Image 1 (spheres, rainbow, N blue to C red):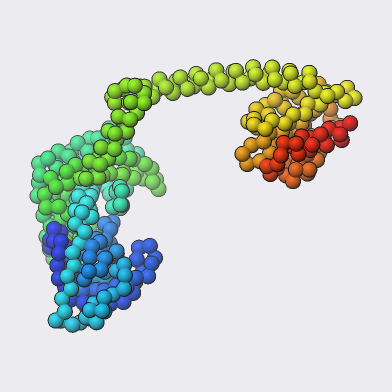
Image 2: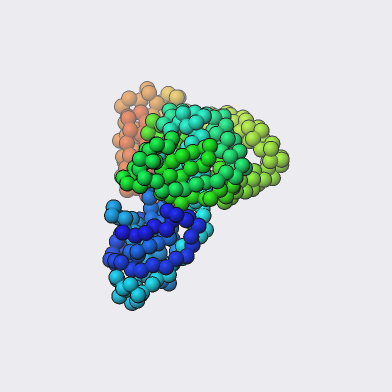
Length: 414
């Protein structure tokens, strides 16, 4: 069993210990690594939704920390064990030095203590009990036993939490016999047997927890909720504390400044400017759609008059080296509104050739799908569709080959 120093002092950064075991273990990413266990450590192991500490042990980087059911804490290393560590198991005279990555530890302390406050206030104000917590690398989440949550309620909770932070209340962490801990108004029952570590923010929260926390809530800096989403029928709240919240505010401010410069307005006017821009885009799209429809009418008229005439039919044959296929389909449909008309259209796009074959309803003896198969068969492609209109594609090829394939289908019609 390892004596966990963080239970008594979350601010400890450096320590010494003796090696009690060594071996190999899989890290959080499934990578097999060499590992050592010590009689005592300041490294926090993954537990209770809080990730592990990183740092240095005996001059070697610690990349994961895990805790066994018997209380043994393992330090997973990013390289082979030094000879002295490998040979020091149960050597009471050998002492190894360790130092944690303080920036990572303090960040976790800020996020975890902020989570306690958010969970307590959500429960106090909205009866939203926390049923899940995850401290992530970029953002943290709590899952609430609520079916919905408005942003007005979120801001009300945020205000209350940050008001407590400004009061800089102390955070007390004590280890009590289980019966004494159960006599307290715990926010949730303890998940461990035996002695229970209780973290208390006076007048705000009392919770059984083995994680690392700040000594006073002022060290959190601030708490900011960034997202609310439905998750498995309940509500998931994403939040940031301390340095993360500050970085988020700075990024948001910068983005607003960039958007304001692009729109030639002040940051506070960005939403209204975006609304105006959206209306302009909608109007522009309507105008463009109308213009395209008019252009399609004129283009269909021109293509029809230029078309070859075979046995009283008009056969429109055209290849565009650079033309949207959607417009080709529209033209085919528009042309086939006329009587006695057959259409063979092809466009060359970045990924290859696309073809549409169609005929007017008064030509039931002509099968557009068969014409399409003939064109695509010559080009090494495939496609299909009903007898009145079919479409497909083929690999990229020279324009003259596409025209020749269309002409082959035209010859069939002749």
